[in-house]
Image (tube, rainbow, N blue to C red; front, side):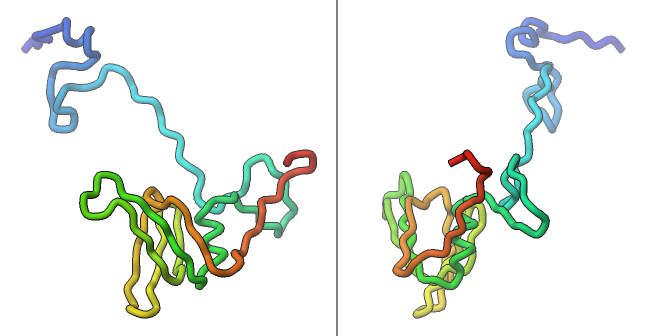
Length: 142
């Protein structure tokens, strides 16, 4: 059985094969998509910075700073776009942990825990001094 493409002008114009499948309902793409480069895991070493064995150097990301301050009371200020009930909200509690995209707080009075998304976070305050280890850079770089 000889199959012909019923509409070859669409393949040239849109770059898709017109034969549909469940995986590609609009046909197969004719071009290969660019390969995505995986992100470095949180807390990884800063590339290009030499360090001696046993020395730990982490990138200075918010989640790493928050992890250094587990157990402290913090206030997280967040805003939420397109929310008719509340556009901004303030969360206060004990910092349980943090990841690249989230913060977990617990309210010691109610025992309630909050899983907050970093994407909504505007800024964070603390009533006490924060632990912070600045990244070690090679000499000559500020």
